[in-house]
Length: 279
Ligand code: G1P
Figure 1 (tube, rainbow, N blue to C red):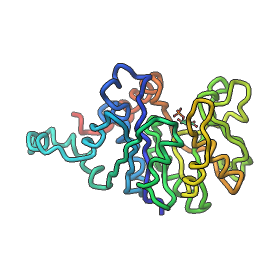
Figure 2: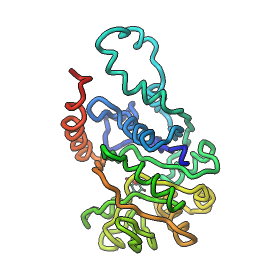
Figure 3: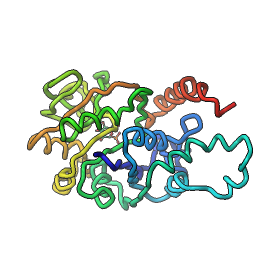
Figure 4: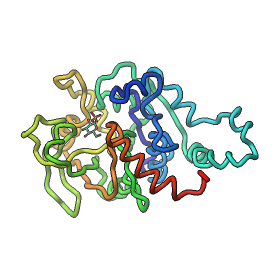
């Protein structure tokens, strides 16, 4: 039903300089696995097999990661180290990967519009790999795909954040139509402090219906010259229906150093040490 997932991955990752000077921020590892691989695995767990990645200059290692490395595989063939490649091999086998280059950075809405040719005319998921979401029972995207099957409209993931952090997110307000599900009536991208319509912040997981592309084409830039998906979704919400879903699970903001370290500690304790591939 949702067959493709778009990964905007063209950004510079300036908050992690100098680490991201020549390495894509999506390749920063949480323990021993790059951030983007967590996102791709989450999409696979949601029944999605088409990974559409919007890249930019200097992102070749992303493409190499989701491909065979014959020399390396030959070197470690038959050794104990081969088990370390099991997960990524399974990921590569379970999905197809297509790429498109975003030539200029003009905001998340522009990145999503850049992916139009890869997605085509069907509903699709969007994962922002910076937001690492973990739920061992049902991934956050899988929860949203299940909701899409029922409601057939665009859905954004939301989480309650402290009031002094609302200026860092897209913020929604709406009517709660059932437990943890809101019909959006307003949304604002990074509201100035004291003006947020609620404390429900959009997290980097979206299901979007394909009419979003035409809306994005007609969405003007914000005061920073960026085209925001939040603005396009507000238009969609005013003309029809957009839902916000307070997801079940943990989320780490790996776009910040603090969130990155918290994610690292959590994954080390709860995933890495629990698996037997590292011994
Ligand atoms: C983007 C979106 C914002 C959302 C956030 C979630 O912002 O524009 O609405 O709340 O992702 O991570 P960014 O963090 O790319 O500035």
